[in-house]
Image (cartoon, rainbow, N blue to C red; front, side):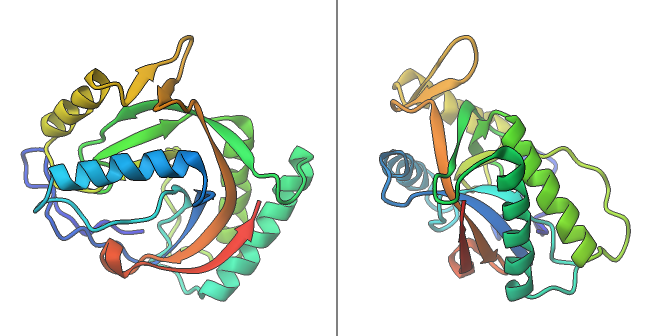
Length: 223
């Protein structure tokens, strides 16, 4: 995906919030209790930041993005993603339909529109392997026009897309902690309104061209 926002020099980004291309999303069940409490907090944050926040978007952790520069179709991406998931499931000894759990690590900001306020996820071996296998198969089937720069996978669940400065986002995260939305959960990780982990049940193929309200789910592959 391509974030077309340009930094303003003060830690903020423009309010347009436009992405480009396809993406693969790890998603929890929309009917789960975890999804319900996360959605509640997302609504609160959007209401608090009216005028600078995006429209509603689905609860997810991006598995793979940055595909806007490749010749690719949603159908072919779904086929390759399904192959990657099957390979990963066999490697991990998992049964289709069971999903897999990932621990919640922290609530933080990266000071950009699309990483404004988010829950970071612990980099478990199954999660990193799913990302690695999927990236490898996608690159084999849809080579980038130029060699892609190496970048570490940053698994997270976004709570808010908004043009806030880093200090503004940090202040709101501090308020969330004070009001008990999340608490530290030693030896590592957090408790987010009673949850210390998320269960992902599917990988969704999304066309993320345009603003969040324009994004469309094309396919869903059970884990």
